[in-house]
Length: 89
Image (cartoon, rainbow, N blue to C red; front, side, top):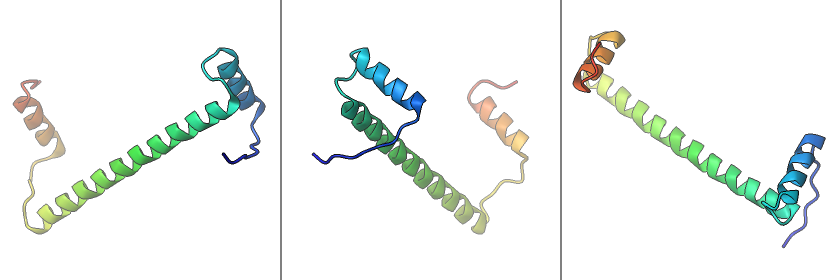
């Protein structure tokens, strides 16, 4: 396994030391690897959210270009949604 030197703020170092001292992790390396796994997962989730948003925007633009849009206000649309869900004001 590769070795890497990392500079940490005093607060980060205290946090890492507490995690190892409390028994949650057996080593500083384990804490760093777990943190990197979480960062990797967070990045993947953000990328998926971005892809979903892009698909939805593209679908909305395609609908608008095809003339499929509503002349209702955002408030009217929200009220319709609430009414359909059985939660109308």
